Image (cartoon, rainbow, N blue to C red):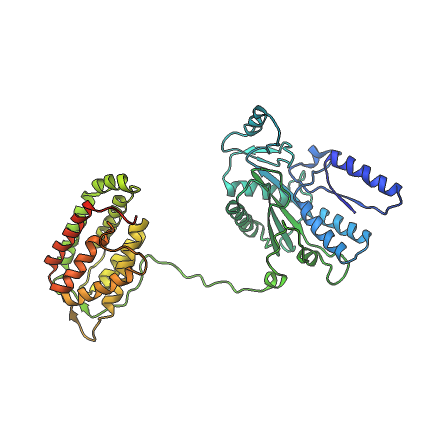
Length: 457
């Protein structure tokens, strides 16, 4: 059995081999694959459609059937059945570079399409497509699926696929698409098939299966499954699932896994506010004093953003000041629009949520880890009745939070990090119970970093 993609040169050369084999008394069947809807009836004329990625499905099923010992006629019958029920179309950002071509000629190939343009229907041998468009991925996929599945397009409606039909989807990489991009393409195609055509393919096959050197494109094939009439174990789906050792075949999911029914996950409505369990730990002073202190410190932090960004641009990646300002702005917004209670655990938890949502980078993660740990360790000292939070309670919670932070970073005093200021504050507060002395110790720790060499960053 000879499987040939519908290109004139291929037909003639393989046809020559078929006729020679028959002249020698061999029993030979030749099956021509033509699945490309990029070439419509009017343009295809007597030549017909090109053969592209649908060929992979024909080869796989006929190969599986032959492996089972089926008769040649049955293999050819199944091959023709697959061809009659599969539609494909490709798209590419550029022509394939043929090895050995001159530099000028290769450059001409690359410049056939301008930046941002994609050619729908381009063949794997650089044959011209049916149209050039400027589309993002969703728009491109929408156009490609319409060419394949629109029953009203009389020029291209080769296969009538209804929502009640069982289908197989194949996404083929021309060769120059990354795995990440191929995954995004596959996801978009599956989404649009379900949303716009109510089609849920029973199998999704993706990979470089009908490649074209470094082709910067992909093709989509949709196969409508039908009855082969060959009995149990020889349906289209079973032939597709049959074991294959070809290194390019993405055989990683078993039939059982494909057919297992999964319940839809519960969709919970996400809200911006998280409910925090109240505690009995109370701020010793009036909550308005806490708000006033935070306003003062955060305002000064915002004013210093330019300097912090300047220095971080010299020794780091320049995002520290911007991250701190975003966090400060977020907390100020919280103070302006949220009622601050005297429950220190609830207030701290509200601040942590803002830090998590507004600050990124290494420092943002460190702040969020430390503040979450601080809220947890304060709650660990909760009492059965309302109790004023003392420096001793704060000091113990801070000490435990430093230990928690140490699980995620090796930073220690002397490494020229924020720990150089934080650690002295925590230690001094625990030793003296004085916030004033702790703040002075933190300032000395920060000043000392001027003469340090950074060990982390």
